[in-house]
Amino acid sequence: MKIAVTTPTGQVGRRLVPLLLQAGERPTLLVRDAARLDPHVRAASDVVELDLGDVDAVVAATAGVDALYWVDPPTQDDDPAAGYARVGAVGAHAVQENGIPRVVFQSSGGADARGGFGEIDGLARTEEMLDATGASVTHLRCGYFFSNLFLDLDSLRGGELTTTLPLDLRIPWVAPADIATVGALRLLSTAWRGRHTQGVYGPADLSFSDVATVVSAAIGRDVVARRVSDDDVAAQLRAFGMSDAQVEGIVGMSRGLRGPHVPEDPRDVRSTTPTTLAGWAFAELRPAL
Image 1 (cartoon, rainbow, N blue to C red):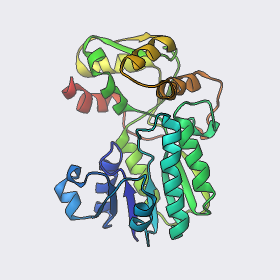
Image 2: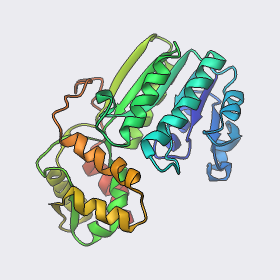
Image 3: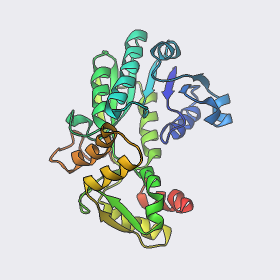
Image 4: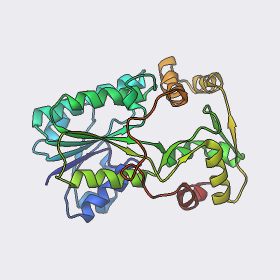
């Protein structure tokens, strides 16, 4: 089996690739900067250095591939949703051009709404483009990454965790390692055909108040969740130099999560994964603080 993996140095990719190696595969890694790869991983893989927005390079790198793990990476586009869709179109073209039979796409909860979720709307467009290729596709509808807490280190050090969501609103939270495990299993399995979606939700839905309580216990200091307004977040992001479209891409995700949308993928034995926030926070977040 020839398996290609995009963004192999990302939060999920750097955990997914070793699983493929342990399964006896020699994956093809599509990476922007090969120097960021672990030397042992690099030696055991076929590495292609490229920009995922370069359609000719991606088509060449995925020729003869049996299974593709596709991720839309963040881009420098003014509109992040359009950037995701632009890169997603490259992936879909490569799948169709090369007749790649199976694709696992790292999507997100909210993509099934097909609109109203900020930058996630770009992942929804990618889902549609991959579906149109005729390949067998599994869209992983991932929950909120535990690792997003690394973006809040300064506020956590100050004892606060801010969000625009209602403090009691519970959403799926998931460890990147769990997404990697599900993704690797789908890539390695040849038992499925057609279009599938699969939630990857972690062990429990959590509110930001729940998260603050769990993090407090894990790091040994009090953290309190505090709700802020969309306008406050937008003003802060604009102060960082973000454009209106970039601000909307971020704020729009929270607006979508607050809405009435019911996820297409239920929480069940297939979508529930084992890594707890408590264990992750103690092992990974605590040392960073």
